Amino acid sequence: MNIRPFIAALCGVLLLTACTPAAPETVGEPASEDSQISSEPLEVVCDDPDAPPELTAEAEDKALPMLMRPEYWDGSVTCGPDLVTMLIETRAGEVPAAEPGTAITVTFPEGAWPGTAMVLAEARDKNGFPVGEGGEMVTLEEELADGVLTFTLPEFENNPSCTGILINIAWGENTAWYAAAFQTGPEDPEGAAVDSPSLAGGGDSDGSLR
Image 1: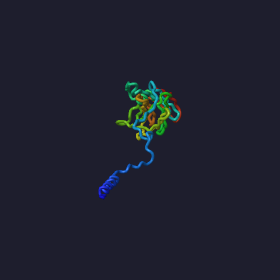
Image 2: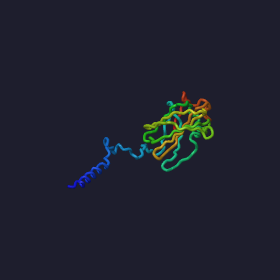
Image 3: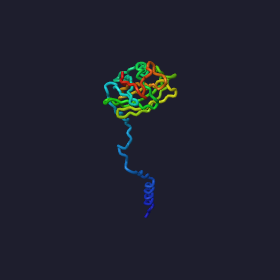
Image 4: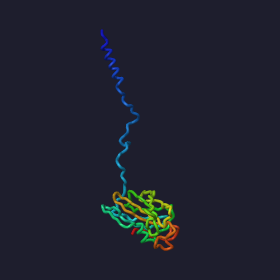
């Protein structure tokens, strides 16, 4: 009996088995759909007011005057003069004195909580104009939660007469600018009385938006 064909067939089977790759080992449970990272962008939840709201701004329990101008609202774009300069020119007597490090709180009314906020601070002279060529502006760290925006007044190297605050608020696609100002140097804002309101004591302002 010739067994060579049988031996050849057996060797072929063994060779085929040895060359076939093993299935990869699975460690643990397969990832569920919930555990996979979603590529969908996070949605910023905010209210949808009909118009830019009136805000309440305070520094060390003193109300601050503010000016507001819509930037982009319901498809309309609004331009105008510099809000900080306008505030210092028209309401210089209400601009309070404050030291760097002063905490500022801005409160939004119910039904007008925003999605995002950006706070800028700029060195200004006593007339409200930017100090130096090109100005000196910084973006401040801020916290926005439950309709309350908080940030801290910065310190500039050149000790400007005033520090202007510009706040850009967004409710979805609608945006508006708000402005405030502080006397942070030795010179009073132009037009301000010698006893201008100070956060160290004395002086009131209605904090309204006009």
